[in-house]
Every structure is written in structure tokens, then in C-alpha cells.
Image (cartoon, rainbow, N blue to C red):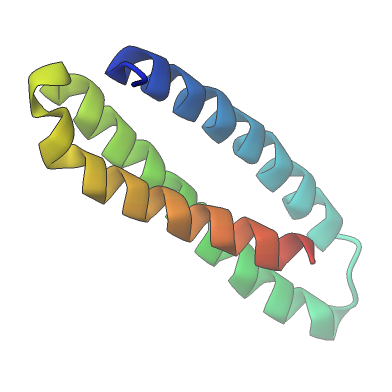
Length: 92
């Protein structure tokens, strides 16, 4: 079974990768046509909100400590899954 510290480390790494991808998507949005920008911007804003929510849940977990891992695990995984799905939709 993976330790909480190892799991948190992997999540932090993935969040940083997604943050970099988000920055790239924002830059691409500037190149879109005016009509496409509106939809693209909404999708980017949604992605940013999900990224921030996942980051907040991860910070909550880190401050709670390993003894409360099971309590916070479901919330972290839910936010994580929402972010992952949003990224997959944006990239397809």
C-alpha cells in the first residue's frame, strides 16, 4: 500500500504538470478566433477552478496529516477526478 507522503508527492507533481498545460492552453486561447475564444475561455476558467479546488483539497490533506488520510481521501480523489476529466475533454 502506498504511503500518504508518496501519494501526496505524486499528486503534487501531477498538479504542477497540469498547471503547465493550463498555461499552454491559455496561451493558445489568445490565438483563437473571437467566437471560439468565448467558448475556449469558459472551458479554461472551468479548468482553472477545478485545478484550484484540487490544489486546495491536497493542501487540506497535507495539513490534516496521515492519521486523517481516510477522512480526506474521498474529497481529494473526487476533486482530482473532476480535474482529470476536464483536462481530457479540453485536450480532445
